[in-house]
Amino acid sequence: MSRQGLSAPRRGPGLGVVYVIGSMGLGGAEQHLLRVASALRRCGYATEVFALDLDGPLALAFADAQVPLHGIRLPQWLQERLPWPRVAARIRIALSVPALWWLYWRRRPQVLHFFLPIAYLVGALTALFGPRTVRIMSRRSLNDYQARRPLLARLERKLHAQMDVVCGNSRAVLAQLVDEGIAPERLRLIYNGVDLERFRNPRNRHEVRRELGVGGASLVFLSVANLIPYKGHADLLQALAQAAPALPADWWLICAGRDDGIGAALRAQAGRLGLAAHILWLGSRLDVPDLLAAADIGVLCSHQEGFSNAVLEGMAAALPMLVTDVGGNAEAVQHGHTGWVVPARNPDALAAALLAAAREPQRERMGCNGRERAEQLFSLQACVAAYEQLYAAACAARPCAE
Image (cartoon, rainbow, N blue to C red; front, side, top):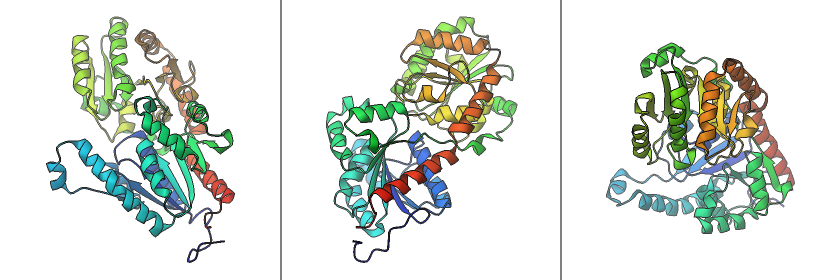
């Protein structure tokens, strides 16, 4: 029976979906959600987002896409008086619980969809006391973080039983979810999708290089990754130090990504290794397509990864990608055909691959192969279609109104 006062459950366009995520930062999950929620809304879905932290550059992007954004924003005067950022985060989380609960009952969406661990914990626990809707969790990374947070790991595994569907963005992620006790029939694989149109008309390669102070004939490696220990920048610097004597004299490494606290240590390491004059640290950038067009080889040397948006964006820009064999990287990059796949945490293997990439005569062809693979398997259109199929099947299996 339907709940009193509720209309009949909607299917397809018009379906109400509330996403819960941690922040509005320039992370891969946040940007993925922006693309998916925006595309679904253009298709007629009633998508909305609740963020545990509304402060961040993507908040305006969601507004521009006309995706309603909800959450808690602490007044500036209060944030300035709090002794540590962690205190502000805990206050926001505490205030988010009643705000989420009220949003659930006020909107009564057909689907609740949780992204990232903290948002899953807060959003799913709150949903237990809300109207019964389809509940979906998306795991976007390997579960290495659980080793550092055993309580979070136990709570997550308890919450898995409350989900109608659990999604992973690579086969490696799905394998870990099975190990966590989720039956395979409750799992869905949805690869990340890249908006190929963003990479069709970048700025002129030589103009971008001139602005960066890089020569037109220089060999340019590009790493698009926030400065976080698990992204492997320290391994990359060590590998470049080994490879540098055999690289062309005029080579560059461009690093684009937010500094999450290790930037100073990485710069010091680059200085000790004699690499500082060859590296540009750009911080967060919104012109990634232009940077990709200005580069020769993309590099991602993570220690852990779910399914990297940065890898797909490099492929979409026809850039050959050198990646470590973690998460879904080897599901995206075909070794020897679209790029190179090397073991993680192995600077020696990484150095050899950097040299191989620098000397590869078919580098441009490999980049084109990567572009074709992105078009065939990892387009935003394919990703959005997979979400539509997910929501239709989940709502059919559990009627959204009871």
